[in-house]
Length: 107
Image 1: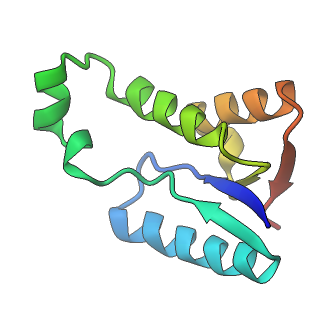
Image 2: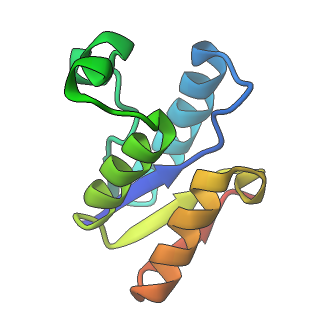
């Protein structure tokens, strides 16, 4: 079974909107026989307090770094609508293309 990560815009969205879009994508991808790798980091390690303790100065860059690490475990990346409007998604897209990954788009 191929592994896939979801790249989705998150800026200006509520956690509920992010999770709804993710759940829809997961359902679609699992029906297409993909194993979805989680890239929505919610554990305490990524809390504002813990990031500050670790000396993280640029939180979006920290999340991007973790996403790229998870991307290394995948065969493909699935980009949700409006991905091109999000800086992190654009960088993930360039990385996926540069490293020859399968790139999929939400219709």
